[in-house]
Image 1: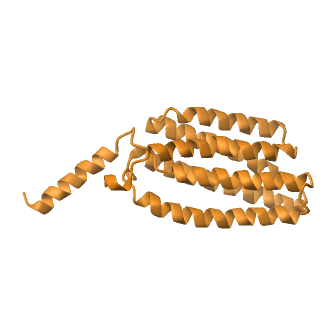
Image 2: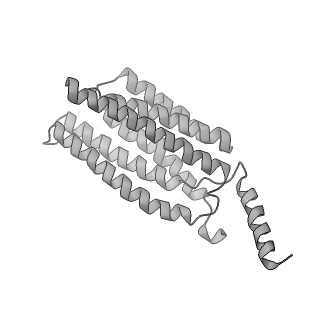
Image 3: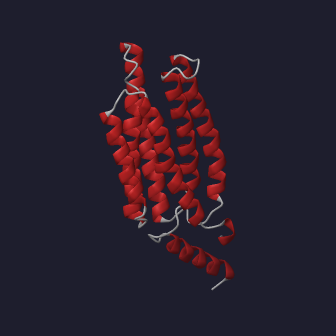
Length: 206
């Protein structure tokens, strides 16, 4: 066996090891970023709705445009960090990426439908549904990763996300729900993100 063949075999064995169900999750930084960004935007939207800030509805639009720009830049920076870590091919991380990709598409679909309704039918309360639907979808993603990846501790945050979603649906269109959602974003997304970051492998392990 040549040295090159040996290295290929070792790489193959390593890949099999990374497929393990209990491999550390490496997407924690994304959770932290989105939890913080959403908390800021929901807090600003609440402040606009209760007239604590001197902006009208157009100000809310600017807030979410800023969210989109910050999310794109932040995701690009975090992706470089994540690519330097081992474990990207592990089942939990592949599931995590796939399910959050699907959740993002689902949320964007809700955004498109509700914003279109607001523009065409002048129903400016329609986008309130985005927040309630979002937390329900967060719960689905968290539960899927917890079950398939063996990270059962995430189920607690999935249940919290569903509880938040139910509360938001019940009190739909109440301005204070945005302040509630701001706090919930930190609890449901940023807290598990911090736990993931503490448990993730280091680049030196490659």
